[in-house]
Figure 1 (cartoon, rainbow, N blue to C red):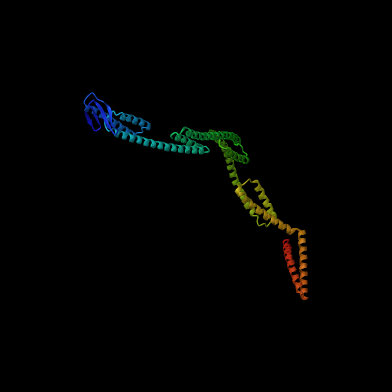
Figure 2: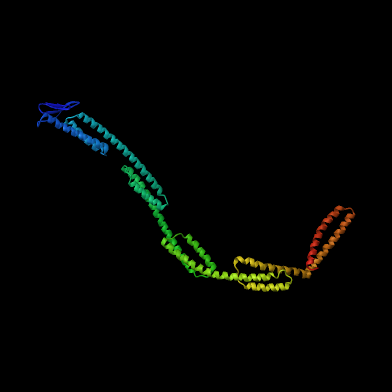
Length: 409
């Protein structure tokens, strides 16, 4: 019989292993010595030790699933329980029990990590949905569209949730994108319609602008061009390719008209500058008639100047009032001289003035006599009242005498 600390071989060749529950039969050995039998089953034990060590390492360092780890542990446990090895089988059981606990701990950790990942993915998708629903109402078509495409890429990179939750969130997300696309499509369809209307309106404006380009009715045509420009701005933009072509035609028609008008106005301005020089010379000639000493000669000379003045055309607008004012001043001076002459030579007016003066002089003389009589009688109150009346009559008499002097009397 042969034995070691963990097993023995009896005289019949039966091999036993020692465990905490007593000896267990390992097997029967008839092919060699007892020592060889023990050595054989000890090698099988070492093999179990190696397998358990490898499994422990896999559980510790790889992403071996709990299910696969449990299958491997059960396989090893079966080999231990069948007692086909000689060694410290109880120690191996303990290691397997610890390995089961480790696998369970890893499973719980992974479960918690997966739950956390799911929560984070749910929160991330809910945030994406909320942003997509907000963008669905945006009118920033380019930036919002680009952002929605970026959100789709972000969504694809997130883990899936349970089917129900994932489908519900995706439905909201997809609906928001569809709503935005529908609004954008409607917007650009409306914009296309507006641009088509603008194109038709601007074609009409261009046709009119081109028809007016050869007009020589400068004022009304220029005013109409200003109206056409206002209508052009109010019409909005047409399609890009049409807009540029229509604008070039519209602007070209205006350039033709205003270029021709500019040439005519330049000639007219040169003519008006020369007219101003001539009228200033006539104003100089007219101003020499003032002060008027010979009314008849002054009237004749002014009439001659005025006839030549009227024969001259327009002068620049900013100089018109000044040069015309000089002529008006001379004309007023002659008119005033005529009025003075009329008053001086009108017998009827002179008679009226003389009669009024005589009446006022008589009234003043009478008041003076009455004042002297009142003073002599000691009636000063009456004298003072008559004196105040005298002041008023004297002032009227002074005015009448001044007017009479104008008649040369």
